[in-house]
Length: 163
Image (tube, rainbow, N blue to C red; front, top):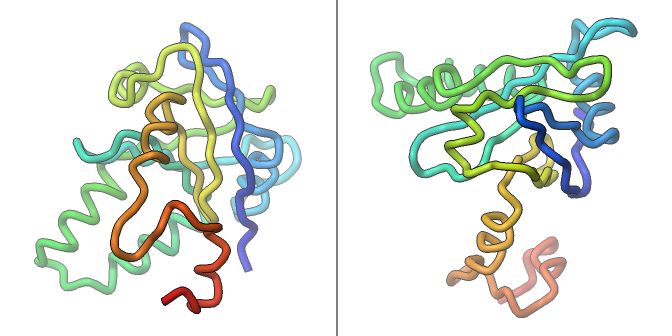
């Protein structure tokens, strides 16, 4: 079973777009890169997506391989497959974690999500998200629909006994 990302933290983004990845996230990225060995930089994929995404999503190599396999099962000429290929193949950057634990977020990606001097890293299972901190806080406040009550302890949804 693939390792999972856990936790959230804020990190400074410098003028060149360099930002430190949380140390625990780096261990997952290393463990889920089949080509990584000590002394080599671990690889990851950052999906920036279309206009509807206001965050960046970090994928380990193993997690992206799973996505690629699912896309490959879709009919080749289908609209769904084309949309998924655009999101997960075209609207991405391949990057590596440098020896100091940082990645470089290009200006295009920083501008897309309004990232200036701070980035919030948020674990999301086998991926992680990078947010502008205020946008993340606003997204939390936006939770709530017919399937989710933001006023209860969310752990009640684990067993499915919440109706």
